[in-house]
Image (tube, rainbow, N blue to C red):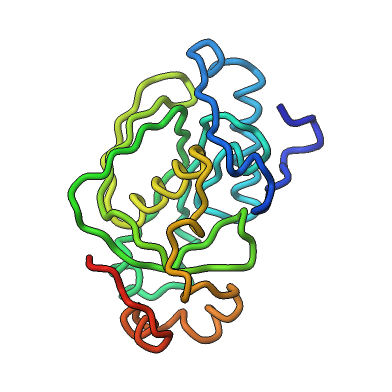
Length: 206
C-alpha cells in the first residue's frame, strides 16, 4: 500500500508496468481492512484533485481491483445542453467498485473523445458500447449490480479496462489522437461526424 504522505496519491503515467498488468482481486476479508479503506479514501481525494470522473487502483501504483467513480454536476458546465444530450451524460454520485465484472449489453456503440489521467495531456476518439452491466462489491463488501447506459457506461468500461491492464490508446482511432489543448482549440465544439471527415477517419459502424 502507498505510504502516508497526505491524501493525494501520485497518478502513474503510461509506460509504467503497473498500468499494463491485470490487477488482483480482493478477498472478502481484505475489503474492510484499514489499509484498503484508507486507499479508497485517498483515491477519492486524488480523483477529485485531478480532477477526473474515475480512478482505478493501478493508476496510483496499486495492483488491486478497485475503482472509484464520480461525475459531478460542476464538471458539466463547459458542455452545452446539446453535447450533454448527445453524450447521454448525467451526474453520477461517488461510488466504489471492487472486483468488478463487466458485461456488454447489446451491440450498439458510440464514438466520443476520451481522456485518461494516466495519459495526461492527450485525448482521442474511442468507440465504446452504449450499454453495460457491472457486478461488483462496494467498499463495505456488499454486492452491487449496475445497469448503465451512455457516458456512465463509457466510464465503467474505461475503469474496468484499467483493472485488466488496458488503456484507451489500445482501442482508440489512432488518427484522432491529439493534445488536449488542440482538442479544446480546434475540435471540442464540432460534431464527431465532422471531426472524422476533416481528419480522414473512417468511423466504425454504430
